[in-house]
Length: 289
Image (cartoon, rainbow, N blue to C red):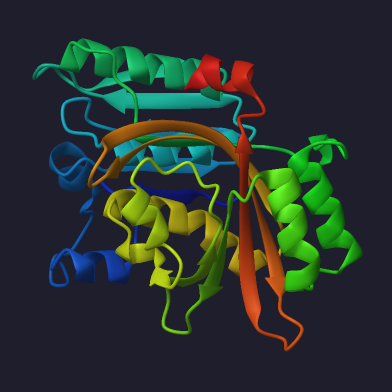
């Protein structure tokens, strides 16, 4: 029988093991015994997920759940083949409700309807992602060309080879990331073609750190994707929708597809290459985002 897994998604979209002592420490709950998930879900905007095999139970509070937590839940569901999903929640002071769905899409649509009902507006998470398939990349597409280059070079990033092709095929929409030993990412270089409506913020990317960009919540959410590539040393491909807050432009919606490639320089330094392009699966995202 598959093992049961219990996680908590915090108000910034970060995933934690439900028994994590680091989570308790970060919330000053070290001395609190027993299950602490209920108050975190009910009052602080967390989402709780318990899964076993293809079954999952999702706990949330429609009144307090954060958009970042729901966005992380979108992604968590998108990379799993759940065939039975239970939602448990309470509305307007009523008792706890339980509803069961046969697909992630049906469960997410129900969650959005509940949040629309609770907040009386068209409710969407600030950041959401769907996992794509690298095998679906066309060799004639911008990301497909760069993926083939990555395979041909065995992930060795040589400026004179990559930079001209990034400009030609990806319109210079790329960011290099360098993982730090203590955690987090430096940004040694960022392309000039990134769709950032705040020019000073765009220029400041190169030479900065990911966690120092203006929208801290977006930076923390995005860092999770790059961290998984560092851990797995495998490329990944995602379709994303984000409402990013820039100091001089406010919150701006961006829909795009992005590929992350684990690379190394000729001297052996490990870096990640994040390349963005036009949203590749508009229909898929329209159905669920």
